[in-house]
Length: 299
Image (cartoon, rainbow, N blue to C red):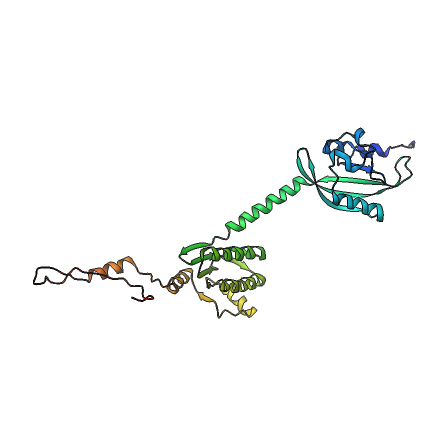
């Protein structure tokens, strides 16, 4: 096999790279940029070569943080890796990751030069932001705090509770207590599928914040495994009212607020026990009356 020497121009290699990049001299003037740089930033290579990088595109790169990074390369010779920067282009703001370092004497240059490479991460950041927003919406939907009566709130804890969701749940609960002036908060754990020690501890500590707002915590539906965990952690529940079911918790909350749950049929049967008194001698009769008194209020 015959051998031959290939003379490859580094400039042509740089031109073939899809990512925008350019080379600066020690005075931060542009030595050259590749085609991808021209297309991304809307400039003409012939117009920018020899000019200060801070003059490109009416000051696209005239950013104090960008200046600091270039100065650090010049003074210490250290590389800049994965440095994020936001640049305003004609089509809007775009986010880039910059990698830069010293490139030794390209061509006939007798001085060190700086190679700067750009990676557009705008679409990646937008996708991550969309995922965070969607997760935030899911967290809010999975924390349905309901006002069932004046000054009474119910917080059903559903699914798997991790630290992030527990924090969000407690944050929304405290906000709802303040907004609704709630005096009783029923935290129902019937729908919890799994809970770890950290989350259990966090929820119990959050009840202290609820009490500071003047509300009473009523825990319902605590499963045996959760109860065993609380005992194992040595959590003191003496200041927390517990009930077996959500129904019992609601009844306790209503009772503590001075309400009594009475079936309609019992009221109707009570009304039927009132008999009209016999007519008086003057011919006038006495009409039956019924008075329903809240047993926790003065008559």
